[in-house]
Amino acid sequence: MNSIQIADKGFEIFLENDNICKRIRLIGIQLNLDYENRCPYFLGVLNGSFIFMADLLKEVTVSCEVGFIKISSYEGTESSGKIQQAFGLPDNLNERDVIVVEDIVDTGFTLGYIISEIKKQAPSSIKVCSLLLKPKALKSPIDELEYVGFEIENDFVVGYGLDYDGLGRNLKDIYKAKSV
Ligand code: 5GP
Image 1 (cartoon, rainbow, N blue to C red):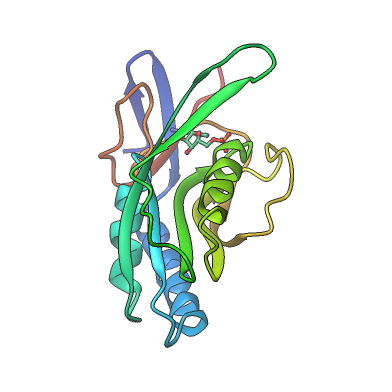
Image 2 (spheres, protein in one colour):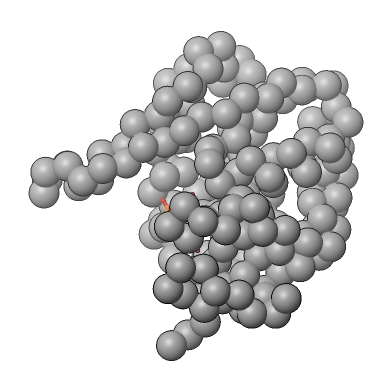
């Protein structure tokens, strides 16, 4: 299907599942080389990363642990801006090699917050593996962003774990919003 409708929005096909899986296989090869004999901790960020995490981990052959966190964000006062809170962050990341698994990095605010929370536990290393990155939306560079599936324009995308208003996470392919 090249075009779909989700609620009030039209979307067109952007990245097909085959293409996504091919890219993930390459990332897996890289991770297996980089983390040989290191037993990394893969930390997925819910909800969007669940399908990516599952497909990625099938390509990882090094011994590893897997967990998930959930970030909630809400508007604070004008001075504090957006307040974020992490739920389910494991407390045993000290001296571990942590790999944060994200669906998409947009402004980078969410990721910046997650990295700062993990750093409090003094891990040996932190790297980020994100399926998608919008380089033009990124507010400041993130040194830990080591593995990126696809760099995309500032379009709104849905599918393969990503939602529009709670819908569309189950789509196999990734779609982008049609410009109106
Ligand atoms: P950031 O903090 O980097 O601006 O935003 C990251 C979060 O915003 C992602 O984890 C995701 O939940 C959401 N997000 C950013 N861009 C998109 C997009 O194009 N589509 C969807 N579905 N979510 C997005």
